[in-house]
Picture 1 (tube, rainbow, N blue to C red):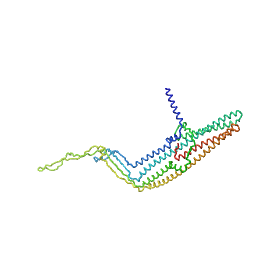
Picture 2: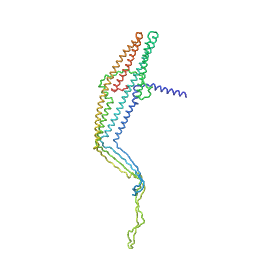
Picture 3: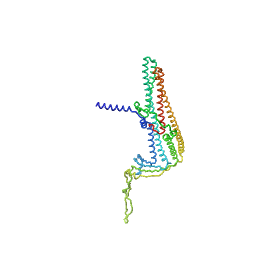
Picture 4: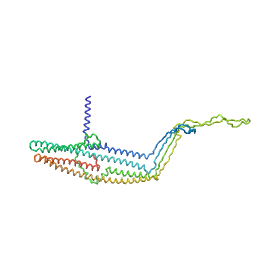
Length: 477
């Protein structure tokens, strides 16, 4: 039993350790975000809602069919329809009705409504795809920010180790009386400053991980981590493309313009629907009714002698009166007929067409046409503005990428110069011809140049990703 528990504990521990050691790649982050992000889920619900609206539009072409029924009790003084007398009684009455209506013509509103519903579904799908692109770009930015923080932390720790070694050597030289005590104190101050920078960068790294985890809707912030990878500066020929080529490619691929174009078409159908309300409508209808009651019924009549006689003549020769019995006529009354027999006997049908011609409705129909005409012009202006905005964004992205590349190249040159200056200062300090302050300043400037290289490197990578995004290259490529 203890062996089984021990094995189970090892399995559980191993599973937890594996889960904690998972390193997320960029592609995994993008895929997971597209499946779990709240904004994307909202867009997916809009697509489902559009499909339901499409079913409504299809249903407008089908005839309506409805059934209704009622059952009532009449209690008190009522006329007995069987005897014709006023009596205190309770009568029951049951009826049911079937109705059907079909639209024959309504200003083509059903057709236009179906076209609009199909277009709305397409527009919602564009919205969903656009949301996925935006989330992918956001994930890529957060992912690269984590990598930047990791590399910055790595450099800071490496510099900390260098400073720590210099401190030990300086303390030995101070004890030997070769260097003044102030040199060791200066290096200690530098070491404390580097420790503070490491703590700040670790906090920044944790916050960047939390930011990405929240985008992915992952709650385990402490154990969430991305793969330890260092991206080289990509050699891309996309910056050699002309801005017009990139703009044209973005217009073909980006969903912003597709959404704006779909909105224009939706506004056009809204105008057609409004104009359809000015036209007559023709509707066909059919109705079936039947009823039943619990009243007694007359099933026949019978004649019976009433005990009296009436003279009808005389016997010839004797003059004797000839008498004939008198009869009374009585109705034969039975209980109510079966309910289904009554429904069958009392049913009726009615059918026809109904024409509705709009003449005057307080200008509501014409005002609705005017409103939709204005709205169509507004949507067209928004489409034109979307084109201008897209061109501006693409040109801005190109300039940002070119500027980021130049900044990265300049940072590399600065780093190389700072490294040579630092090595020279280190040699002078080791030879005792330079003090610790000058050495610390040179080391600090070299560290800053390394951080700037990392910053400009990942800034350029992201700017390049944005251009590739407009060009149609997947963000996780």
